[in-house]
Length: 77
Image 1 (tube, rainbow, N blue to C red):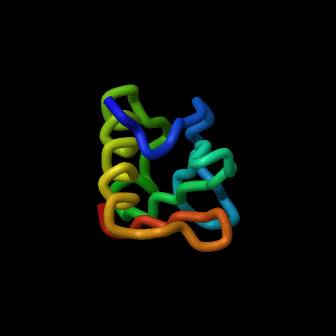
Image 2: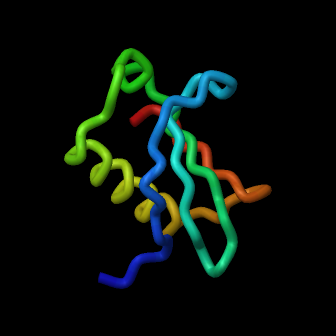
C-alpha cells in the first residue's frame, strides 16, 4: 500500500483541542491530525481497529485536501 502519510503510534486525547489526535510524517514534515467527533470524545480509549479506521479516514482526507500549518482537522466522523 502506498501511504500518503506514515503514522506514529501516539494516538491520545488532546484536552486543549477537545479531540483525539495523533501525529504522522508526510513528505518529511511532522503533522498533527485532530479527530473532532462527538462519538469519540466520550471514549476513554480507542482500540486498534478504530485506530486503523482513523488512519484510513486520514488517508482519504489527504487525497482531496492539503494540511494547513502542519495540522489536519477532521470533523464529524
